[in-house]
Image (cartoon, rainbow, N blue to C red; front, side, top):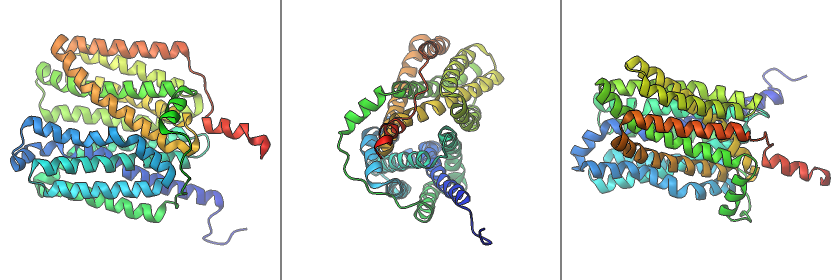
Length: 413
């Protein structure tokens, strides 16, 4: 019998998981918001710094460069020094970069500040997802990761809105100072709510060898391929669709933004559902369905003639992306040993950054070479072929690598 006000162990575990998930969701939301926060302010930045269009592009790309370069080392750091330490360091780095952008009047400082933000974002993103995976209830890792990934959609919607509205109502500096304050607030919550990380010894195997071994194990290769393809298609659609909708339907920038916000909202709602589906029925279902739905959305973007058709198509695309990604992330998680999970999320971050870097370039090239209709058709064909290959090969429901290892040594304990 327990006294009044004393929580049972199961209730305490549930409370602890909820607190950890809340901190992780807060960090992921900030990371996603930072990507679009600056977009509405580009005209003001151009006036403040005197930067050309090309130089503004470099400033924006400065955010992504550290993510591509540092994802694997930061993943290793999350495994060795603990998720909590890396999460707090990443958020404090984001706060510092945000303050520097707020006070920047030169292109050089702006580029440096965006790069600092990128370093912090990579660190906090990797450690936040690893935390969610570490504390997910048995058999519900996909659902937990889906809920965390839904925060990406929330941040993607909130970032541009926060940047535009607060800059208009308050000042240019306001959105960046709000981002700084939000990051510091999550740092305070993390310091109080997150358990103390366990410092591990230096890993024996080189990171590259671990990555190759893990991707070749189980369904790691499928997870890597789906992540790379999904991010590439996202970048491609984000280039082709706005230009096509402007030219073909004469939509304004705000109307196109609303259509994409609707797509992101569908993504945020679908991600936890896809994760739950994968937990209960296996990852193949949401992975295959997501890729098929993505291919259908590309066809409908070309075929449906009006703004309502565009809204429906982008909504369908959001659902397809969410389903495929909600399968790929847990699959990649399962491919890595438990003590190497941070490195696994570094790989996921690197693959996503690579796909998202190639997609816009390929989209712009296809658009100029073939026009929007054929570019959509080629995209649909590639994704449909990948879905067919996945469904024909039918990856087996492999148990996570760390479970295999535990089972192998169970008789020796």
